[in-house]
Image (cartoon, rainbow, N blue to C red):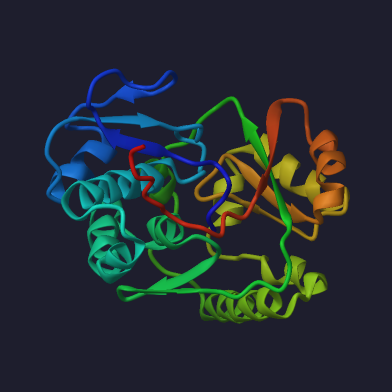
Length: 259
């Protein structure tokens, strides 16, 4: 899911904008930029908190790849669309999976597997309230807590809810979202070590969110609700974190031509 926290990146040509930072070749955006054929140095500006499960690494990798594409091919959106498959493949290779990079590249909510990404049609345009604690988690460390095998019943449970989620989003059946976002494969394991996140997730549901889930590997918790209810929901979340009221970003990655 692409959210309205936007990374910006560009090749350095003179002064960098206020709030941006010059990155080195080891930064995820810098690595992606060079792997995509970019030349020179980049600046990056990002409001996405690092290590909170909000897809920072995927977003900046797409930013680096798109910056390299713009350097080589210009800002024509049709040209970018023609290269989207190879851009996705490189980003997924660098990220280790396509989930976050596909959403950052194409926008909206995407389903992705085996090098393909398809945007899921949405019958509504909700707010997404994110609760972000002060502490961080390591995605790699979090993965070590996951078992190497799953019960057949748990796999069936999640597969059914994945299908239900796609159908609910496309049909606008908000009443089905709470059931559709239930999970038996990773959330309980990860939430067991982050009590504040577990409390925040339950708090969102108790406050009337359509659904709530652990964002990525955490510790951020996200909740979906009507836009008119978003501020009230944000205000009801625990005080040991801060909240942002976001929207789903439908535009995906874009290239802005120089004036």
